[in-house]
Length: 373
Image (cartoon, rainbow, N blue to C red):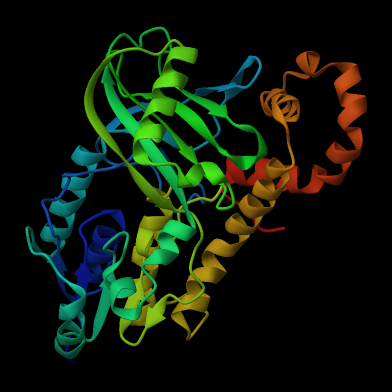
């Protein structure tokens, strides 16, 4: 029986996950990466296994995140010991992942740029094409939806800073803005290096349209406000696709990872969903056990919908919250009930009762990876 020939465009998490799975299933697999594996990474480097489907990274782990800091009006400590969350060196992890794919039998071609004009030829040459090219995806350029990602993405800017982060320790810091505007983050990689940035999330927020210069100025202001300082080693950022596309298949081309738009609408993380969609694309092609949909788009939505539904409903709730309400939620997440106080509990009790069930689903998903109702 002839092996299925699979082409993967992109050597990021989604593409490499597809390559490893395809090689494991005995397929003939080629990966085309436009640069070099592990180069030009734009990521805060938090690795959150939100669905308990990908497990701890095998290499590149800087530390297990056992506590996070959530600051609004006051700063709260959030126990993360039961959450599958690690801070990683993504470049190191990604290079190792590529070695795994090669060892399993995948062929990886670096500095091999694929354009939308090449897509038709690849469809003729291969049985299936997996588009893990990021954003804008190669497929979006060919089929005319490249603006989808900007319209439905978070706008982010980030510094990699060298400084003294020993005071924060091995804790991730989040400063959420009211009305689902986004958040500011400080993610230490070590006591001397940290990823520091912020993103505007709400697609309807006027701040998303600010020119790049003003975004960087806003980041500088937030750093002064939070007393974060250091030498700028690198500037990164861009669009994070936080609204998954309904259509994920175009003929023989399957969209996965960022190309599919599957980063979290709540926090923007997307390494785990990239791994899941890349792997699931190959299993769908193979007709593996557990696949329930003949339609690829339907299969990916089946897998991710329970989590995305909870996150989108939380985003809708967040959009209603002013700064004081966000502070109340932060205190509740940290289980700091004393700080909430009786007066604020009474003030927000109708909303707390209304949103109790979705909050309970969120907590269950956060701890166990089980997001279904």
